[in-house]
Each structure stands twice: as structure tokens, then as C-alpha cells.
Image (tube, rainbow, N blue to C red; front, side, top):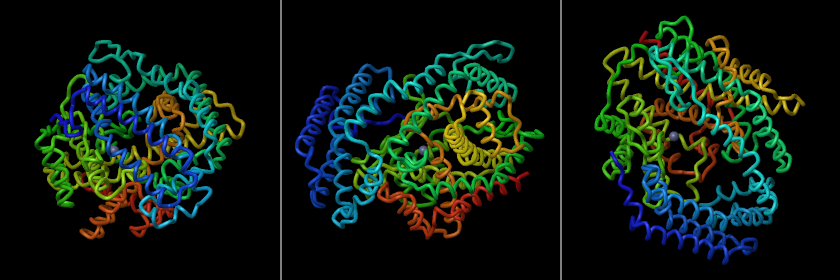
Amino acid sequence: MIWDLSQLVRSTEPTALKKEMISGVAEAQEIRKLYHGKIIDFDAKSVLGFLELRDAYLLKYEGVVEYCYLLYSADSTSEVAKELHEAIREAQMKIEQEFAFIDIELGKLLSKNPSLVQNPVLGEYRHLLEKILRRVPHMLAENEEQLIIAKDKNGVNSWQLLQSDWLSTRTFEIEIEGVKKQLPYGKIIGYYQSPNRELRRQANQIVYENLGKDEILWASAIRAVCGDHLQMCKLRKYPHAMTQSLIANDVNKNSIDSLMRTIERNVNLYRRYLGLKAKLMNLPKLANFDLAAPLPKAPETKYSWQVSRKEVVDAYAEFDEEMGIWAEEMFTRRHIDGKIRKGKESGAWCASWISGKSAYILQSFNERLGDVYTQAHELGHAIHAYLGSRNQKPSNLEIGSCIAETGSVFGEILLTERLLRKARTREEKQAILANVLDEFGMAAFQVSARVFFEQSMYDSIQQGKFLDGETVAKLWTEARDKIYGGSVDWLDVMKWEWTMKPHYYMANRRFYNYPYVYAQLFVFALYKLYKEQGKAFIPKLRRILAAGSSKAPHDLAAELGFDINKEGFWQKGMDQAKEFIDMLEATM
Ligand SMILES: [Zn+2]
């Protein structure tokens, strides 16, 4: 259950690793010396040579970089890990500075000579160049960009620090079985999913009541972050508050508009599920603190590491034999760390190892159904990395959020299919389906409310309104009610829910939200297609995963015969959700 990181490097000796870092920085300096100021005169062949050189550089040092980060996430208390982590961060910052000229100079070259993008010599890098070209009209001069980085560091970036410091230093008083306890934020939110309804209610009430007491602080922060963004939109000539995010996610406004319209047209489907969940919980109506709660009759099945491994690997193998082999290889090569221990990072993620054509997964395996799902999810990312690294240049593996979750969420549905087939009792089936639908509701609908909320803040500022705490809270509840209508009872203090979302305080993370909605419906639509086409669909999914970031999401969908600008595509994803809801209703 513990991973083997030694495969990443030639030697795990700290002095040898530091030597490699030094030569990595020196090589970056050398590249800058050779090419700075020269890119503007490149022809297609020299652009190709240069991009291949940069890719070779990335591959050469990837193992060392990854080793240092992964070692630290596996044990942040180890002195060696701390030292190497700090050293690699320092080296990477230097390398980033040395390479900062590349995108700026490529941008200048492409705006001088846009036909280069279509040059067949650069075929493999075409979409990378298209993405740079799309950013060109919004780039500022090099010294202006540097100034923005400098002013953000102590300016707009500080709001995020303030918010996270607030959350990590406050304690909240809660009464558990007659005993009063002071709990930090990270602990008290654990009670949001407690089987005890009164504890769930209390935890929500206490946290949001306290956040609301500092509404003046949160409103100031939100006003500053949004105001700064609108100012930058003017400077960078973004036509819309969402443009920066659209470019970063490699999508266009039309497709997101049709996605959000599909959500609005299907709110009743989600509300229908919430009604069914209320019935399963023996409640006339759900309260907000029931949304993520487990079903009262859910069986408490334990899944050992070996059982989980078999279920997940078989789920992939039943779909595609080779995917099953890759999933199994992640275990046999010891690329998954599941053991719970002190000093290990919480949460779960998968890091691609491109030069090794594989990946590494970290999770905290607790033998619960949710942990089996997490394993399936992360192995989906790993399979994405297996296919991508075998088919693409490293530069084409910077996959945007809309597509990055394709393998992972698809894998979760494959697991669902398998577990449902094996489920013996009605309660087991209900627990599996509720798990899937809770996640779907959260990612597709709850997150959509946040998209509406964010847009309404920019609209209000542009109409000259002053956003004080109560005004922001009103925008929040209006956006929320657009999704939930009267289907859920909300504690009054939930109007302060926006205050705890870190993304709202992050600079350059405007409209972080819709990619989650996008990914959910995209994958549900793919799964529906699989059900219609059977085995013929398998190579199509492989092509999407193998494409990495070499194609825009729009083109990936087009290859399947879909137009993501049209609501019909997104509706297909919604219809798959409806099938799961119908299945749940049939068990009742
Ligand atoms: Zn993921």
C-alpha cells in the first residue's frame, strides 16, 4: 500500500538529486542564452526544433521534480523530504523565470506570421500554437506583465491568504453527546456527513453563523477581487468577465451558454431526485444539511485493499482489456500509496509520469465505499496518462479542466455498473445510486448555482451597485434558488455559504466553476453513447484520452459526431442521469 518512488530517479541520494537540480537550472539558462530574442525570426522548422528541445528538457528533469514533490506529500515531517521540496521549488522558480520569454516571443512571432499555425511541419504542435495565438490580443508588454505579477503578490493574492488563515485559525464550539468541544474548521466540517442529523444541523449552523459575523470582511474582499478582475479585463481587452477563464479552459462562450441553459431546463430532474432522497431518509423534505448525508439504511460494508483492487481493476478490464492491465500495473509496480499515516497529505490525486509513461496515485484508503470510488477515479486519471504519454508530445499533455476528468469520471461509472450488478439487497443498490447521484447533483447543479452567482456579481458592479455583505448574500440565495426552487429547506445562515469558497478570493481564478459542470455532463453523455453503441464506442473513448491537449474539447466532441454548442449534446448527459434516477425510483 506504499508506493516505490525510486523508479523516478537514477539515485535517491539527496546530494545527487541536488546536483541534477543545479544542472537543470544551468541548462535552462543555456537555452535562454541561445534563443532569447531569436524566436521572432524563426521559420516553421526552427519552431519545431525549438519546441522539441523544450519537450526533451521537460522529460529529462521530470523524474527529479516529481520525486521531490511526491516524497514530500508522502511524509511532510521528514527532514530530507522538506529539504528536497524546498530545493526543487527554488529551482523551478528559477527555471520558470528563464523560460518566461518563450510564450511572449512565440506570441509575437505568430501574430507577425499567423500562417505558421497551419504549417504541416508543425502539425503535432498546431493546437498548442493556436492556444498561444488566442492569448496574443490580451498579452501586455513584458515589463507590464512583470508589474502585474509584482502587484498581485501583495495585492489581490492576499485576500486568499486572509481567508484561508481565518478558516484555519478559528475554532467552533459544538456539543457532541452532551460534551462541549472546540473544533477547528477541518474537523467540524467532518460532521456535515455524519449519520446523526442533529449533529449535521448543528455543524452547519455553527460554522456559517460564525462566518456571517465577519460579513464586512468577506464583502470587502469580494469587492476588491471582483473590482480588480474587471479592471484587468479592461486592460487586457477581454470582452467578457468570463473570457480569461474560457481561454484557460480552451472552450468558447457559446458552448458554455448552451451548457448552462441545459442545466436551467433540467432543474426539475434534480429536484425529483432530491424528493426521492427525502423519501429514502423518511423526511417530508430535505434540509440543506441532508444534501450530502448518507442514507440511513446504507449497509456499512468494509472493502479491503485487495477487494477494492479487484473491483476497480475488473471494472476497467470488463470495458477494455488493456485498460485493466494498466490499472493492475499501477498496483504491481507500486505506484499507489493508500496507507494512512501521520505527515501524509490528505485528499487524493494522480500525478502523471510522462517520461515513465505511467503515473503515481496518492490516497488515504479507509476501506469505505467512497475510497473504492476514489481509487477508480484516480486510476482513470492514470489510464489517461498511460494513453496520453504514449501518443503525445509532453507539451500536448497540459489538459484543461473540462477534459481532464474524462477518464476518472468514466471509470467511476464503470465501477457503478459493476457494483450494481453484484449488489444483493435493495439497500445496497440504493446506497450506490445515491452516491452517484449526490456527486452528479453537486458537480452539475450545485456548481451551476455558483456560475450564476459569480455572473450576477459582475453584472451588479457594472450596474453601479455597492456589494455589501447582505447584497452579496441576496445574489447568492437568488442563484441558489434558481436551481433548488422550494425543494430544500435552508438554514437562514446558509446565505453566508459564499464566504467559505476559497476560489472566490483567488486572483486569476474567475469562473473556476463551469468546467466541473462541463466534465460531468460530458462524461455522462459519453457513457450514454457507450450504452447505445456498445464495443464500437471503446476506441472512441481511447482516442479522446490519447489526444491529451492536442485538440480542443470542441473538436474532440465533433469527432464523436457532437456539436457542444448545441443543447442536444448536453441533454444526452442529462438523460443518462435520468436513467440513474429512474433506477433508484424502481427500487422504492
Ligand atoms: Zn479528478
